[in-house]
Amino acid sequence: MREAFRGDQRVDPDALLARLDAVRRFLGAADGHLPDSQLVPAHTLVERAGTRLALSRDHTVVALAGATGSGKSSLFNALARLELSPVGVRRPTTGVTHACVWGQQEGAVRLLDWVGVLPRHRFVRESALDGDDESALHGLVLLDLPDFDSVQRSHRMEVDRLLGLVDQVIWVVDPQKYADRVIHTGYLREFHRHRDVTLVVLNQADRLPPAELPRVLADLRRLLDADGLDGVPLLATTAIDPAGIGDLRAALERTVAERQAALRRLAGDVDTVVSELDELVGSARPAGGPDDATVDGLTRALAGAAGVPAVTDAVQRAYRHRAVASTGWPLVRGWRRLRPDPLRRLHLPGPGGETADPAESLVAATSVPDPTAAQRSALGLAIRAVADRAAAELPADWPAAVTTAARSRLGDLPDELDRAVAGTDLGMGHRPVWWRVVGALQWLVTLAALVGLGWLVLGYALRALGLPKLDNPAVGEVPLPTVLLLGGLLAGLLISALTRPVVRWAARRARRRAERRLTAAVATVGDEYVLTPVRVVLASYAEARDALKDAARR
Ligand SMILES: Nc1nc2c(ncn2[C@@H]2O[C@H](COP(=O)(O)OP(=O)(O)OP(=O)(O)O)[C@@H](O)[C@H]2O)c(=O)[nH]1
Ligand SMILES: [Mg+2]
Image 1 (cartoon, rainbow, N blue to C red):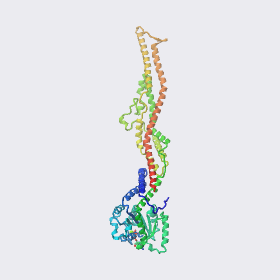
Image 2: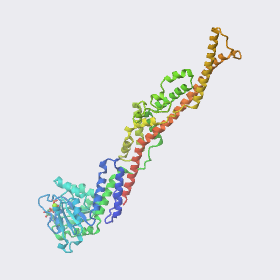
Image 3: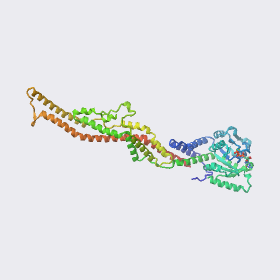
Image 4: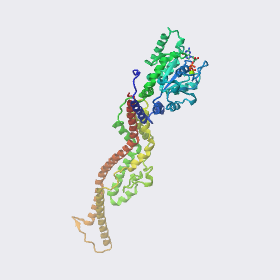
Protein backbone atom coordinates (compact mmCIF):
# COMPACT_ATOMS: atom_id res chain seq x y z
CA MET A 1 0.00 0.00 0.00
CA ARG A 2 1.26 3.45 -0.86
CA GLU A 3 1.15 6.24 1.71
CA ALA A 4 -0.44 9.55 0.88
CA PHE A 5 2.04 12.04 -0.50
CA ARG A 6 3.37 14.09 2.36
CA GLY A 7 4.65 17.00 0.29
CA ASP A 8 5.87 19.61 2.68
CA GLN A 9 5.07 17.72 5.88
CA ARG A 10 7.84 18.33 8.39
CA VAL A 11 9.90 15.52 9.86
CA ASP A 12 10.64 15.90 13.55
CA PRO A 13 14.32 15.05 14.17
CA ASP A 14 13.55 13.41 17.52
CA ALA A 15 10.83 11.25 16.00
CA LEU A 16 13.23 10.23 13.24
CA LEU A 17 15.90 9.34 15.80
CA ALA A 18 13.34 7.26 17.71
CA ARG A 19 12.42 5.40 14.51
CA LEU A 20 16.08 4.75 13.72
CA ASP A 21 16.55 3.52 17.26
CA ALA A 22 13.66 1.13 16.72
CA VAL A 23 15.37 -0.17 13.55
CA ARG A 24 18.50 -0.68 15.63
CA ARG A 25 16.47 -2.60 18.22
CA PHE A 26 14.96 -4.67 15.44
CA LEU A 27 18.43 -5.57 14.19
CA GLY A 28 19.56 -6.51 17.68
CA ALA A 29 16.61 -8.85 18.00
CA ALA A 30 16.73 -10.34 14.50
CA ASP A 31 20.50 -10.70 14.32
CA GLY A 32 21.49 -14.34 14.27
CA HIS A 33 17.93 -15.46 13.60
CA LEU A 34 17.27 -14.09 10.10
CA PRO A 35 19.69 -14.51 7.18
CA ASP A 36 22.27 -11.69 7.17
CA SER A 37 21.48 -10.86 3.56
CA GLN A 38 17.96 -9.83 4.54
CA LEU A 39 19.27 -7.45 7.18
CA VAL A 40 21.78 -5.63 4.98
CA PRO A 41 19.43 -2.75 4.00
CA ALA A 42 18.54 -2.10 7.64
CA HIS A 43 22.20 -2.20 8.71
CA THR A 44 23.09 0.15 5.86
CA LEU A 45 20.31 2.54 6.83
CA VAL A 46 21.28 2.67 10.50
CA GLU A 47 24.90 3.28 9.65
CA ARG A 48 24.21 5.85 6.95
CA ALA A 49 21.60 7.71 8.97
CA GLY A 50 23.90 7.85 11.98
CA THR A 51 26.67 9.36 9.87
CA ARG A 52 24.44 11.77 7.95
CA LEU A 53 22.82 13.12 11.11
CA ALA A 54 26.20 13.53 12.78
CA LEU A 55 27.42 15.58 9.80
CA SER A 56 26.24 19.10 8.96
CA ARG A 57 22.49 19.52 9.24
CA ASP A 58 22.87 23.08 7.91
CA HIS A 59 23.73 21.73 4.48
CA THR A 60 21.44 20.08 1.97
CA VAL A 61 23.03 17.74 -0.55
CA VAL A 62 21.14 17.83 -3.84
CA ALA A 63 22.08 15.66 -6.81
CA LEU A 64 21.36 16.25 -10.48
CA ALA A 65 20.72 12.80 -11.96
CA GLY A 66 19.66 11.72 -15.41
CA ALA A 67 20.53 10.20 -18.73
CA THR A 68 23.56 11.30 -20.69
CA GLY A 69 23.08 14.49 -22.61
CA SER A 70 19.97 15.53 -20.68
CA GLY A 71 21.83 18.62 -19.51
CA LYS A 72 22.83 17.90 -15.89
CA SER A 73 26.20 19.61 -16.22
CA SER A 74 24.64 22.49 -18.09
CA LEU A 75 22.10 23.00 -15.27
CA PHE A 76 24.85 22.64 -12.68
CA ASN A 77 26.89 25.36 -14.37
CA ALA A 78 23.86 27.55 -14.90
CA LEU A 79 22.88 27.33 -11.23
CA ALA A 80 26.48 28.01 -10.17
CA ARG A 81 26.72 30.73 -12.81
CA LEU A 82 30.20 29.39 -13.64
CA GLU A 83 31.62 26.84 -16.06
CA LEU A 84 32.55 24.29 -13.40
CA SER A 85 31.60 20.98 -14.94
CA PRO A 86 32.59 20.30 -18.53
CA VAL A 87 29.65 20.22 -20.93
CA GLY A 88 30.33 18.11 -23.95
CA VAL A 89 29.22 16.91 -27.31
CA ARG A 90 30.90 13.54 -26.86
CA ARG A 91 28.77 11.37 -24.61
CA PRO A 92 29.00 10.56 -21.76
CA THR A 93 30.82 13.68 -20.68
CA THR A 94 30.76 13.65 -16.89
CA GLY A 95 32.60 10.61 -15.53
CA VAL A 96 33.09 11.74 -11.94
CA THR A 97 30.81 13.64 -9.64
CA HIS A 98 31.35 17.38 -9.34
CA ALA A 99 30.19 19.41 -6.38
CA CYS A 100 29.48 23.05 -5.72
CA VAL A 101 29.00 24.41 -2.22
CA TRP A 102 27.13 27.63 -1.57
CA GLY A 103 28.25 29.70 1.43
CA GLN A 104 30.04 28.27 4.45
CA GLN A 105 32.44 25.57 3.42
CA GLU A 106 32.83 24.38 6.99
CA GLY A 107 30.75 21.28 7.54
CA ALA A 108 30.36 20.78 3.82
CA VAL A 109 33.92 19.46 3.59
CA ARG A 110 33.25 16.49 5.83
CA LEU A 111 29.94 15.94 4.09
CA LEU A 112 31.71 15.79 0.71
CA ASP A 113 34.40 13.52 2.15
CA TRP A 114 31.65 11.16 3.24
CA VAL A 115 29.78 11.41 -0.06
CA GLY A 116 33.09 10.76 -1.78
CA VAL A 117 33.57 13.76 -4.08
CA LEU A 118 37.27 14.31 -4.72
CA PRO A 119 38.62 17.71 -3.55
CA ARG A 120 39.65 18.66 -7.08
CA HIS A 121 36.03 18.34 -8.19
CA ARG A 122 34.67 20.56 -5.43
CA PHE A 123 33.85 24.21 -6.04
CA VAL A 124 32.67 27.01 -3.78
CA ARG A 125 30.39 29.95 -4.40
CA GLU A 126 32.02 32.53 -2.14
CA SER A 127 29.52 34.99 -0.78
CA ALA A 128 32.09 37.80 -1.03
CA LEU A 129 32.12 37.34 -4.80
CA ASP A 130 28.39 37.45 -5.22
CA GLY A 131 27.27 39.94 -2.66
CA ASP A 132 23.86 38.87 -1.49
CA ASP A 133 22.80 37.31 -4.78
CA GLU A 134 23.56 33.78 -3.76
CA SER A 135 22.72 34.01 -0.07
CA ALA A 136 19.36 32.32 -0.60
CA LEU A 137 21.21 29.18 -1.63
CA HIS A 138 23.64 29.19 1.32
CA GLY A 139 23.84 25.65 2.64
CA LEU A 140 23.28 24.04 -0.76
CA VAL A 141 25.71 21.32 -1.84
CA LEU A 142 24.87 20.62 -5.48
CA LEU A 143 26.21 17.48 -7.15
CA ASP A 144 26.50 16.88 -10.90
CA LEU A 145 26.39 13.11 -11.33
CA PRO A 146 27.54 10.97 -14.25
CA ASP A 147 24.82 9.50 -16.45
CA PHE A 148 22.86 6.60 -14.98
CA ASP A 149 22.14 4.90 -18.30
CA SER A 150 25.81 4.91 -19.08
CA VAL A 151 27.69 2.50 -21.28
CA GLN A 152 30.34 2.90 -18.56
CA ARG A 153 29.63 0.51 -15.71
CA SER A 154 31.65 2.67 -13.31
CA HIS A 155 29.31 5.61 -14.00
CA ARG A 156 26.26 3.56 -13.10
CA MET A 157 27.89 2.34 -9.92
CA GLU A 158 28.87 5.86 -8.93
CA VAL A 159 25.31 7.07 -9.53
CA ASP A 160 23.77 4.21 -7.55
CA ARG A 161 26.13 4.85 -4.66
CA LEU A 162 25.40 8.56 -4.54
CA LEU A 163 21.66 8.19 -4.93
CA GLY A 164 21.79 6.26 -1.66
CA LEU A 165 23.51 9.11 0.16
CA VAL A 166 22.17 12.46 -1.03
CA ASP A 167 19.36 14.36 0.64
CA GLN A 168 17.42 15.28 -2.48
CA VAL A 169 17.45 14.23 -6.15
CA ILE A 170 16.63 16.35 -9.17
CA TRP A 171 15.90 14.04 -12.08
CA VAL A 172 16.84 15.74 -15.33
CA VAL A 173 15.07 14.47 -18.46
CA ASP A 174 14.97 15.89 -21.97
CA PRO A 175 12.24 15.98 -24.61
CA GLN A 176 13.77 13.08 -26.56
CA LYS A 177 14.36 10.61 -23.80
CA TYR A 178 11.90 11.53 -21.04
CA ALA A 179 9.87 8.36 -21.68
CA ASP A 180 12.82 5.93 -21.74
CA ARG A 181 12.08 2.77 -19.85
CA VAL A 182 15.36 2.65 -17.96
CA ILE A 183 14.80 5.95 -16.17
CA HIS A 184 11.30 4.97 -15.09
CA THR A 185 11.60 1.31 -14.13
CA GLY A 186 15.25 1.40 -13.07
CA TYR A 187 15.22 4.60 -11.07
CA LEU A 188 12.16 6.78 -10.66
CA ARG A 189 9.92 3.91 -9.57
CA GLU A 190 12.48 2.94 -6.91
CA PHE A 191 12.16 6.42 -5.47
CA HIS A 192 8.45 6.39 -4.81
CA ARG A 193 9.02 6.41 -1.06
CA HIS A 194 11.17 9.50 -1.45
CA ARG A 195 8.58 11.60 -3.22
CA ASP A 196 9.05 14.49 -0.81
CA VAL A 197 12.75 14.75 -1.71
CA THR A 198 12.27 14.24 -5.44
CA LEU A 199 12.00 16.85 -8.13
CA VAL A 200 11.76 16.27 -11.88
CA VAL A 201 12.84 18.77 -14.51
CA LEU A 202 12.16 18.60 -18.21
CA ASN A 203 15.31 20.31 -19.50
CA GLN A 204 15.95 21.62 -23.01
CA ALA A 205 12.41 22.97 -23.02
CA ASP A 206 13.62 25.49 -25.60
CA ARG A 207 13.91 22.67 -28.12
CA LEU A 208 10.14 22.15 -28.09
CA PRO A 209 7.74 24.38 -29.96
CA PRO A 210 6.02 26.42 -27.23
CA ALA A 211 2.69 24.82 -28.06
CA GLU A 212 4.13 21.32 -27.56
CA LEU A 213 5.55 21.96 -24.09
CA PRO A 214 2.28 21.54 -22.10
CA ARG A 215 1.49 18.31 -23.96
CA VAL A 216 4.95 16.83 -23.21
CA LEU A 217 4.73 17.94 -19.59
CA ALA A 218 1.30 16.31 -19.26
CA ASP A 219 2.62 13.10 -20.81
CA LEU A 220 5.60 13.11 -18.42
CA ARG A 221 3.29 13.77 -15.49
CA ARG A 222 1.22 10.73 -16.46
CA LEU A 223 4.37 8.58 -16.56
CA LEU A 224 5.47 9.87 -13.18
CA ASP A 225 2.08 9.08 -11.70
CA ALA A 226 2.46 5.53 -13.02
CA ASP A 227 5.88 5.39 -11.34
CA GLY A 228 4.23 6.18 -8.02
CA LEU A 229 5.64 9.69 -8.07
CA ASP A 230 2.33 11.52 -8.11
CA GLY A 231 2.61 14.93 -6.56
CA VAL A 232 6.35 15.44 -7.08
CA PRO A 233 7.17 18.88 -8.51
CA LEU A 234 7.70 18.86 -12.27
CA LEU A 235 9.43 21.89 -13.82
CA ALA A 236 10.46 22.86 -17.33
CA THR A 237 13.99 24.30 -17.65
CA THR A 238 16.30 25.67 -20.29
CA ALA A 239 19.89 25.43 -19.10
CA ILE A 240 21.33 27.64 -21.82
CA ASP A 241 19.14 30.58 -20.81
CA PRO A 242 19.52 32.08 -17.32
CA ALA A 243 15.82 32.89 -17.34
CA GLY A 244 15.08 29.24 -18.01
CA ILE A 245 16.12 28.03 -14.58
CA GLY A 246 14.20 30.52 -12.43
CA ASP A 247 11.67 28.00 -11.12
CA LEU A 248 14.34 25.42 -10.36
CA ARG A 249 16.37 27.98 -8.48
CA ALA A 250 13.33 29.03 -6.47
CA ALA A 251 12.58 25.41 -5.63
CA LEU A 252 16.16 24.90 -4.46
CA GLU A 253 16.00 28.04 -2.35
CA ARG A 254 12.92 26.67 -0.59
CA THR A 255 14.60 23.31 0.00
CA VAL A 256 17.69 24.96 1.47
CA ALA A 257 15.64 27.26 3.67
CA GLU A 258 13.52 24.44 5.08
CA ARG A 259 16.55 22.31 6.04
CA GLN A 260 14.23 19.32 5.96
CA ALA A 261 15.53 17.34 2.99
CA ALA A 262 18.08 15.27 4.94
CA LEU A 263 15.45 14.30 7.51
CA ARG A 264 12.82 13.56 4.88
CA ARG A 265 15.22 11.47 2.89
CA LEU A 266 16.09 9.37 5.94
CA ALA A 267 12.42 9.09 6.91
CA GLY A 268 11.77 7.76 3.40
CA ASP A 269 14.66 5.32 3.83
CA VAL A 270 13.14 4.08 7.09
CA ASP A 271 9.79 3.64 5.28
CA THR A 272 11.48 1.60 2.56
CA VAL A 273 13.37 -0.62 4.98
CA VAL A 274 10.34 -1.15 7.20
CA SER A 275 8.11 -2.10 4.29
CA GLU A 276 10.71 -4.56 2.99
CA LEU A 277 11.08 -6.13 6.44
CA ASP A 278 7.38 -6.20 7.07
CA GLU A 279 6.78 -9.56 5.43
CA LEU A 280 9.79 -11.04 7.22
CA VAL A 281 8.24 -10.16 10.53
CA GLY A 282 4.48 -9.87 10.21
CA SER A 283 2.44 -9.47 13.36
CA ALA A 284 2.11 -12.99 14.75
CA ARG A 285 1.54 -13.45 18.46
CA PRO A 286 3.01 -16.88 19.12
CA ALA A 287 2.68 -18.55 22.52
CA GLY A 288 5.75 -18.46 24.78
CA GLY A 289 6.68 -21.99 23.71
CA PRO A 290 5.26 -25.35 22.62
CA ASP A 291 2.20 -26.83 24.35
CA ASP A 292 2.41 -29.24 27.30
CA ALA A 293 1.67 -32.35 25.24
CA THR A 294 4.57 -31.58 22.89
CA VAL A 295 6.88 -30.92 25.84
CA ASP A 296 5.80 -34.25 27.37
CA GLY A 297 6.60 -35.94 24.08
CA LEU A 298 10.05 -34.38 24.17
CA THR A 299 10.62 -35.54 27.75
CA ARG A 300 9.57 -39.08 26.83
CA ALA A 301 11.93 -39.13 23.87
CA LEU A 302 14.75 -37.73 25.99
CA ALA A 303 14.08 -40.35 28.66
CA GLY A 304 14.29 -43.06 26.01
CA ALA A 305 17.56 -41.69 24.67
CA ALA A 306 18.95 -41.34 28.19
CA GLY A 307 18.24 -44.99 28.90
CA VAL A 308 15.72 -44.27 31.67
CA PRO A 309 13.77 -47.52 31.02
CA ALA A 310 17.00 -49.53 31.37
CA VAL A 311 17.83 -47.73 34.60
CA THR A 312 14.38 -48.12 36.16
CA ASP A 313 14.46 -51.75 35.17
CA ALA A 314 17.78 -52.09 36.94
CA VAL A 315 16.36 -50.28 39.98
CA GLN A 316 13.55 -52.79 40.24
CA ARG A 317 15.90 -55.74 39.90
CA ALA A 318 18.45 -54.20 42.25
CA TYR A 319 15.78 -53.66 44.86
CA ARG A 320 14.83 -57.33 44.71
CA HIS A 321 18.45 -58.36 44.70
CA ARG A 322 19.33 -56.25 47.70
CA ALA A 323 16.15 -57.02 49.61
CA VAL A 324 16.65 -60.74 49.19
CA ALA A 325 20.29 -60.37 50.19
CA SER A 326 19.16 -58.68 53.40
CA THR A 327 16.05 -60.62 54.27
CA GLY A 328 16.68 -64.04 52.74
CA TRP A 329 17.67 -67.16 54.63
CA PRO A 330 21.05 -66.26 56.14
CA LEU A 331 22.79 -69.42 54.97
CA VAL A 332 22.11 -68.63 51.29
CA ARG A 333 22.53 -64.85 51.52
CA GLY A 334 26.25 -65.12 50.88
CA TRP A 335 25.56 -66.93 47.65
CA ARG A 336 23.12 -64.13 46.66
CA ARG A 337 25.80 -61.55 47.26
CA LEU A 338 28.10 -63.21 44.79
CA ARG A 339 25.72 -62.26 41.98
CA PRO A 340 26.39 -58.74 40.57
CA ASP A 341 24.16 -55.88 41.62
CA PRO A 342 22.11 -54.76 38.57
CA LEU A 343 22.49 -51.05 39.35
CA ARG A 344 26.21 -51.18 39.98
CA ARG A 345 26.62 -52.84 36.63
CA LEU A 346 25.35 -49.51 35.14
CA HIS A 347 27.82 -47.62 37.35
CA LEU A 348 24.89 -46.18 39.23
CA PRO A 349 24.72 -45.82 43.03
CA GLY A 350 25.55 -49.05 44.76
CA PRO A 351 23.94 -50.28 47.95
CA GLY A 352 25.93 -47.77 49.99
CA GLY A 353 24.77 -44.88 47.76
CA GLU A 354 28.25 -44.27 46.36
CA THR A 355 28.44 -43.28 42.69
CA ALA A 356 30.80 -44.43 40.01
CA ASP A 357 34.48 -43.55 39.92
CA PRO A 358 34.56 -39.76 40.45
CA ALA A 359 37.20 -39.36 37.74
CA GLU A 360 34.74 -40.81 35.27
CA SER A 361 31.81 -38.76 36.47
CA LEU A 362 32.60 -35.79 34.20
CA VAL A 363 32.19 -37.61 30.94
CA ALA A 364 30.29 -40.81 30.34
CA ALA A 365 29.35 -41.00 33.97
CA THR A 366 27.25 -44.09 33.61
CA SER A 367 27.39 -47.28 31.61
CA VAL A 368 23.78 -46.96 30.54
CA PRO A 369 23.60 -48.36 27.01
CA ASP A 370 23.81 -45.82 24.16
CA PRO A 371 20.52 -44.89 22.54
CA THR A 372 19.42 -47.09 19.70
CA ALA A 373 18.85 -45.74 16.20
CA ALA A 374 15.12 -45.82 16.88
CA GLN A 375 15.52 -43.83 20.10
CA ARG A 376 17.71 -41.30 18.34
CA SER A 377 15.23 -40.80 15.55
CA ALA A 378 12.38 -40.54 18.08
CA LEU A 379 14.33 -37.77 19.80
CA GLY A 380 14.90 -36.04 16.46
CA LEU A 381 11.19 -36.17 15.75
CA ALA A 382 10.28 -34.87 19.20
CA ILE A 383 12.64 -31.91 18.81
CA ARG A 384 11.22 -31.24 15.37
CA ALA A 385 7.70 -31.31 16.86
CA VAL A 386 8.74 -28.81 19.53
CA ALA A 387 10.11 -26.47 16.84
CA ASP A 388 7.07 -26.91 14.60
CA ARG A 389 4.59 -26.23 17.36
CA ALA A 390 6.51 -23.26 18.71
CA ALA A 391 6.93 -21.72 15.25
CA ALA A 392 3.47 -22.54 13.92
CA GLU A 393 2.40 -18.90 13.73
CA LEU A 394 5.67 -17.35 12.64
CA PRO A 395 6.28 -15.89 9.17
CA ALA A 396 9.14 -16.23 6.67
CA ASP A 397 12.48 -17.41 8.02
CA TRP A 398 11.52 -17.53 11.69
CA PRO A 399 10.40 -21.18 11.72
CA ALA A 400 13.82 -22.13 10.35
CA ALA A 401 15.43 -20.06 13.10
CA VAL A 402 13.33 -21.85 15.72
CA THR A 403 14.28 -25.26 14.28
CA THR A 404 17.95 -24.31 14.29
CA ALA A 405 17.66 -23.14 17.89
CA ALA A 406 15.87 -26.31 18.98
CA ARG A 407 18.69 -28.38 17.50
CA SER A 408 21.50 -26.01 18.44
CA ARG A 409 22.59 -27.98 21.52
CA LEU A 410 21.85 -31.44 20.22
CA GLY A 411 25.54 -32.29 20.45
CA ASP A 412 25.58 -31.58 24.19
CA LEU A 413 22.54 -33.71 24.92
CA PRO A 414 24.12 -37.18 25.31
CA ASP A 415 26.60 -36.04 27.96
CA GLU A 416 24.05 -33.85 29.71
CA LEU A 417 21.48 -36.64 29.82
CA ASP A 418 24.08 -39.04 31.15
CA ARG A 419 25.11 -36.53 33.79
CA ALA A 420 21.46 -36.00 34.73
CA VAL A 421 20.89 -39.74 35.11
CA ALA A 422 24.10 -40.16 37.10
CA GLY A 423 23.21 -37.23 39.35
CA THR A 424 19.69 -38.39 40.14
CA ASP A 425 19.06 -39.85 43.59
CA LEU A 426 17.35 -43.10 42.68
CA GLY A 427 16.21 -43.62 46.25
CA MET A 428 18.38 -46.70 46.55
CA GLY A 429 20.97 -45.23 48.88
CA HIS A 430 19.90 -46.85 52.17
CA ARG A 431 18.55 -50.18 53.44
CA PRO A 432 14.96 -49.91 54.69
CA VAL A 433 14.42 -50.63 58.39
CA TRP A 434 12.06 -53.50 57.64
CA TRP A 435 14.85 -55.32 55.77
CA ARG A 436 16.94 -55.17 58.94
CA VAL A 437 14.06 -56.34 61.13
CA VAL A 438 13.30 -59.28 58.85
CA GLY A 439 17.02 -59.98 58.45
CA ALA A 440 17.48 -60.06 62.26
CA LEU A 441 14.44 -62.32 62.59
CA GLN A 442 15.95 -64.68 60.03
CA TRP A 443 19.17 -64.79 62.03
CA LEU A 444 17.20 -65.49 65.20
CA VAL A 445 15.31 -68.46 63.76
CA THR A 446 18.45 -69.76 62.07
CA LEU A 447 20.24 -69.50 65.37
CA ALA A 448 17.41 -71.47 67.02
CA ALA A 449 17.72 -74.16 64.35
CA LEU A 450 21.49 -74.27 64.80
CA VAL A 451 21.14 -74.57 68.60
CA GLY A 452 18.61 -77.39 68.08
CA LEU A 453 20.96 -79.08 65.62
CA GLY A 454 23.94 -78.74 67.97
CA TRP A 455 21.91 -80.08 70.85
CA LEU A 456 20.78 -83.08 68.85
CA VAL A 457 24.30 -83.78 67.57
CA LEU A 458 25.62 -83.55 71.15
CA GLY A 459 22.89 -85.98 72.32
CA TYR A 460 23.82 -88.52 69.60
CA ALA A 461 27.51 -88.17 70.37
CA LEU A 462 26.96 -88.80 74.08
CA ARG A 463 24.81 -91.80 73.27
CA ALA A 464 27.42 -93.19 70.87
CA LEU A 465 30.14 -92.85 73.47
CA GLY A 466 27.93 -94.52 76.10
CA LEU A 467 27.98 -91.43 78.26
CA PRO A 468 24.94 -90.44 80.40
CA LYS A 469 22.35 -88.83 78.20
CA LEU A 470 21.24 -85.25 78.41
CA ASP A 471 18.12 -84.42 80.28
CA ASN A 472 16.07 -83.20 77.31
CA PRO A 473 13.10 -80.97 78.06
CA ALA A 474 10.15 -81.49 75.74
CA VAL A 475 7.42 -79.40 74.19
CA GLY A 476 4.41 -81.62 74.47
CA GLU A 477 5.60 -84.93 73.07
CA VAL A 478 8.43 -83.44 70.92
CA PRO A 479 11.84 -82.90 72.48
CA LEU A 480 12.97 -79.25 72.57
CA PRO A 481 16.09 -79.65 70.33
CA THR A 482 13.91 -81.07 67.57
CA VAL A 483 11.41 -78.26 68.06
CA LEU A 484 14.24 -75.75 67.83
CA LEU A 485 15.74 -77.30 64.69
CA LEU A 486 12.55 -77.95 62.75
CA GLY A 487 10.77 -74.86 64.06
CA GLY A 488 13.78 -72.68 63.15
CA LEU A 489 13.98 -74.14 59.65
CA LEU A 490 10.25 -73.87 59.06
CA ALA A 491 10.09 -70.34 60.43
CA GLY A 492 12.95 -69.34 58.09
CA LEU A 493 11.14 -70.74 55.08
CA LEU A 494 7.89 -69.14 56.17
CA ILE A 495 9.48 -65.73 56.62
CA SER A 496 11.08 -66.00 53.17
CA ALA A 497 7.78 -67.00 51.60
CA LEU A 498 5.88 -64.18 53.27
CA THR A 499 8.51 -61.57 52.45
CA ARG A 500 8.73 -62.38 48.73
CA PRO A 501 5.46 -60.66 47.57
CA VAL A 502 6.21 -57.68 49.79
CA VAL A 503 9.65 -57.36 48.17
CA ARG A 504 8.11 -57.56 44.72
CA TRP A 505 5.57 -54.87 45.52
CA ALA A 506 8.21 -52.64 47.13
CA ALA A 507 10.52 -53.16 44.10
CA ARG A 508 7.79 -51.92 41.76
CA ARG A 509 7.28 -48.92 44.01
CA ALA A 510 11.03 -48.20 43.99
CA ARG A 511 10.98 -48.40 40.21
CA ARG A 512 8.15 -45.87 39.93
CA ARG A 513 9.88 -43.50 42.33
CA ALA A 514 13.15 -43.74 40.35
CA GLU A 515 11.21 -43.20 37.12
CA ARG A 516 9.61 -40.04 38.48
CA ARG A 517 12.95 -38.62 39.60
CA LEU A 518 14.75 -39.53 36.38
CA THR A 519 11.95 -38.06 34.25
CA ALA A 520 12.16 -34.83 36.21
CA ALA A 521 15.94 -34.72 35.73
CA VAL A 522 15.66 -35.42 32.02
CA ALA A 523 12.92 -32.79 31.67
CA THR A 524 15.27 -30.22 33.19
CA VAL A 525 17.87 -31.06 30.55
CA GLY A 526 15.21 -30.75 27.83
CA ASP A 527 14.20 -27.39 29.20
CA GLU A 528 17.73 -26.05 29.24
CA TYR A 529 19.02 -27.56 26.01
CA VAL A 530 15.96 -27.56 23.74
CA LEU A 531 13.17 -25.37 25.07
CA THR A 532 15.22 -22.43 26.32
CA PRO A 533 16.94 -21.82 22.93
CA VAL A 534 13.47 -21.98 21.32
CA ARG A 535 12.08 -19.49 23.82
CA VAL A 536 15.00 -17.17 23.11
CA VAL A 537 14.06 -17.09 19.40
CA LEU A 538 10.39 -16.53 20.20
CA ALA A 539 11.31 -13.65 22.49
CA SER A 540 13.58 -12.24 19.78
CA TYR A 541 10.73 -12.50 17.32
CA ALA A 542 8.39 -10.60 19.63
CA GLU A 543 11.05 -7.95 20.18
CA ALA A 544 11.75 -7.65 16.44
CA ARG A 545 8.04 -7.40 15.66
CA ASP A 546 7.45 -4.68 18.26
CA ALA A 547 10.57 -2.77 17.24
CA LEU A 548 9.49 -2.80 13.61
CA LYS A 549 6.07 -1.53 14.60
CA ASP A 550 7.77 1.37 16.41
CA ALA A 551 9.98 2.00 13.37
CA ALA A 552 6.90 2.21 11.15
CA ARG A 553 5.32 4.84 13.40
CA ARG A 554 5.68 8.33 11.95
N1 LIG B 1 19.25 23.73 -26.41
C1 LIG B 1 19.64 23.28 -25.24
N2 LIG B 1 20.76 22.56 -25.17
C2 LIG B 1 21.12 22.11 -23.95
C3 LIG B 1 20.38 22.38 -22.78
N3 LIG B 1 20.99 21.80 -21.74
C4 LIG B 1 22.09 21.19 -22.24
N4 LIG B 1 22.17 21.35 -23.55
C5 LIG B 1 23.20 20.80 -24.43
O1 LIG B 1 23.11 19.38 -24.36
C6 LIG B 1 24.42 18.82 -24.42
C7 LIG B 1 24.65 17.94 -23.22
O2 LIG B 1 24.70 18.67 -22.07
P1 LIG B 1 25.44 18.22 -20.75
O3 LIG B 1 25.18 19.25 -19.74
O4 LIG B 1 26.84 17.84 -21.01
O5 LIG B 1 24.65 16.91 -20.42
P2 LIG B 1 24.91 15.91 -19.23
O6 LIG B 1 23.57 15.49 -18.74
O7 LIG B 1 25.79 16.51 -18.24
O8 LIG B 1 25.62 14.70 -19.96
P3 LIG B 1 26.61 13.62 -19.34
O9 LIG B 1 27.62 14.34 -18.58
O10 LIG B 1 27.13 12.88 -20.49
O11 LIG B 1 25.77 12.72 -18.47
C8 LIG B 1 25.38 20.00 -24.50
O12 LIG B 1 25.76 20.22 -25.84
C9 LIG B 1 24.59 21.14 -23.97
O13 LIG B 1 25.02 22.39 -24.51
C10 LIG B 1 19.19 23.17 -22.93
O14 LIG B 1 18.47 23.44 -21.99
N5 LIG B 1 18.87 23.58 -24.19
MG1 LIG C 1 27.53 15.94 -17.47
